[in-house]
Amino acid sequence: MPVTRKYYSRYVAKLGCWNILIIFLLYVLFDIWFLTTISMADKKVWWILILINLSGIIAIYRTYKEIKNIDQK
Image (cartoon, rainbow, N blue to C red):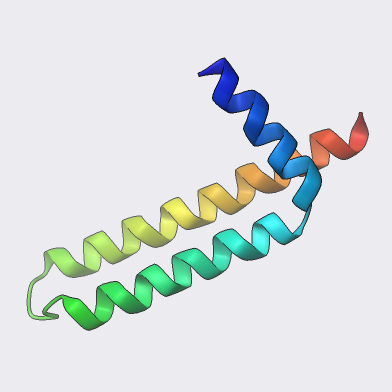
């Protein structure tokens, strides 16, 4: 995994804040796809949707912290 982390850091450094926008758009597109393909009658759908959005918020926050750490170096 260190090799993957090294390449990810280069990717974040090159894209900067655009990376946050890309992650946000991917999660929005995934939400739209999820809502159009799954039946809304099941109670589990809402829990899955909440967890997907929570993971998106965490991914955006971690990316922001990574960009902030790169900018401070």
